[in-house]
Image (cartoon, rainbow, N blue to C red; front, side, top):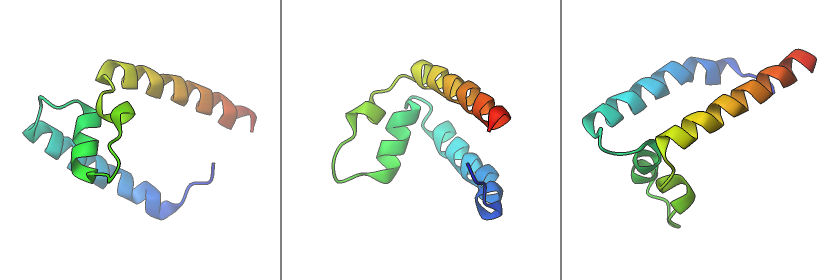
Length: 73
């Protein structure tokens, strides 16, 4: 995966804004926050109803898989 410097610089800012918004609405799950912010024309139940614990696990799996791919690729 190619990284672009502009994207890397935006990560901290974006995560800080997500954190700030989530702290203001701590009862929301991450998916609920994202769907609420984006307000897509077509409702996204797969994202809206995802449990934070499940998302965390999937992120860990993704990071493990991609770190192995980056080592070999």
